[in-house]
Length: 483
Ligand SMILES: Cc1ncc(COP(=O)(O)OP(=O)(O)O)c(N)n1
Ligand SMILES: Cc1ncsc1CCOP(=O)(O)O
Ligand SMILES: [Mg+2]
Image 1 (cartoon, protein in one colour):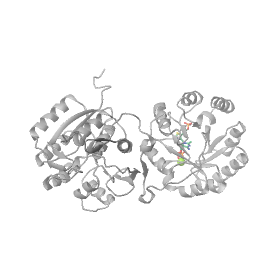
Image 2 (tube, helix red, strand yellow; image 1 turned 60 degrees about the vertical axis):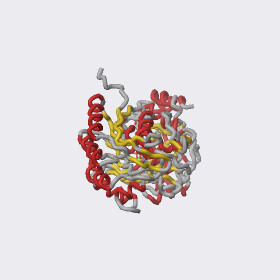
Image 3 (cartoon, helix red, strand yellow; image 1 turned 90 degrees about the horizontal axis):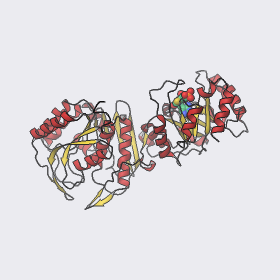
């Protein structure tokens, strides 16, 4: 067996030592350990600091840092690098050499001083960072003062992030915790998309949160998480750490833990600044049980006749008249029956017809007027395939949240590999009691039975019913199992 298999992913931490153990390398090491990764540490400066501020960067030898890196690289397969304080020009040059020898993700938290005040990084280092380090960085995570110091005072987060990305950084995550907004709003600019991540801010001033955010991000990337998921999970880790923070000496310190994140700590995601913090209300729906997704009014009739109580009409036809015909016919089937009838995609038609609810995917959310759906009193179900899509769904506050594909599916081409039962269990543990969850993708009778044990309230399926040799028998088996 390959000796590197089953090893904790190694994260190389490059930053300053805070002898008080609150920020810098100490905070980084604690974070990386609590993410199940192995920390390797290169000290860039032996700082002198107290609650009054930073008084000394503390010289270390660049040659020694280089030698230490070579030792680390010789013995470990480094999966991600996190950089914090770069106090001197010679150290900055040494870091550039290190980055040139590394191929994986590089997270740079541009620490330019201490939040307690005092000394700041000299101008020549700042210029070097801008021109020589940023082009080698995957994600840069400035807070507002750092963004202003690196770009222009009082620049907008959107413009500032754009300027940093012009230097060659893939992703810029601007942390908004220093603003006087009641929400902690981070702005993310990347080639994939620009978006805002936000959660409630607590009144307490907690030390070292920037270091923890960046090293959490590095750990998640080292563990193979998608970059948007890593940002959402890192923000959640910090929010939980702040919520459970405790007093140490003169400081309030972040709480570290390997336990699962609670929903209250999970950030919300939206793409437009005017939607930040806007909460919509949708009627609740009960656990939905066996939930067939079908392509015609004919199928709606056949399955309602079998006793199905939740069903979705999903007509993937361009012809609007045809969709309208299916919808009208399905509506007359479910009229005056205790059936939860959802319409896929066509939210305007669903409102007009007075359906029970609408199901929308993440792309559909871009185009739909969800305020109108909410005002019309329809339930809303939203698809998720990842943590960042879950953050988007939470911002919408829907009636239920679907996770898929749980297994390989032949009904739809998707850029997502199967989530598996373990991931479904995470969704159930996180969301149960807050949102009903629907599992979808490759679910048949046997698998539905296994999934039931996770505590999921509903399983949706296309093929298992509509392509069955005996759809009535399969439907009865499913209904009997989900009693
Ligand atoms: C219950 C349920 N879950 C997920 C989906 C998928 O919706 P979406 O992502 O919008 O994809 P399409 O179905 O529109 O192809 C669903 N329809 N129902
Ligand atoms: C629409 C959709 N969204 C996620 S999986 C899926 C298809 C589910 O179909 P099947 O039950 O045949 O796998
Ligand atoms: Mg859709």
